[in-house]
Length: 291
Picture (cartoon, one colour):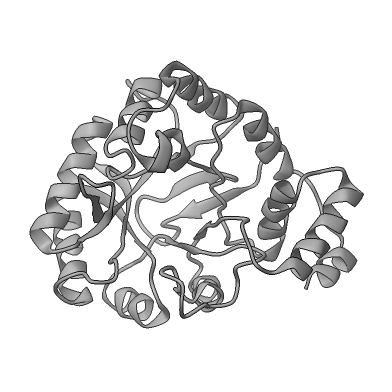
């Protein structure tokens, strides 16, 4: 299948070539992103099918499960060959009550990086996104400096950001090369909602990514309270004979060449639909209609 490509770390000594779309592993866990999947063998088969279809970028984290998706990736692909790229993230941890808690102090970030290395059976993580949840102790600069130190030690190849606002983004790019940004963004979630825990200026950050030639990785949900926009999506999706979820993916790929979608699914059929969506085209008139 003829998939488009994007370069991570374009202006560095070690660029990585990624085929669009990637795959987000979060949904491969049990309910509430906790525990093992209902069928572990099926989850491993899905990961291998994704690679067979040309996917070489897998988004994961040691707090998915926790520890589940990293170990699934290792079981599916280790010993690693070819051009597989694993992107993980740090800055959060799961409580015993399944809560999501901040985990972004320097010593905590180091533990997370070491944990990801161990679970993925790697000596160096290709890409790590730093995120700071609301309520994190310490300032952003302290956490960022800790990540720079881990990168200097060779534990991280490329450094990315997640759940980041424009001010944090500009601070980071003033200190070093930022390889990628992973923020909430989709057709129905382009407007910052101050009441949302994920109100991270998706559109503004995307614009800055384009200016800096930095890939933007959107994570999203199609659950929305914007029925008018959903109606437009459905109208265009029906005209192409595809689902609204597929059209959201097509729209993302048409919105900017710097967008790298990572749709997740537990279904091989939906996986195949997502990969096929990457080859579909929307006319200028359709994009204008969608807005």
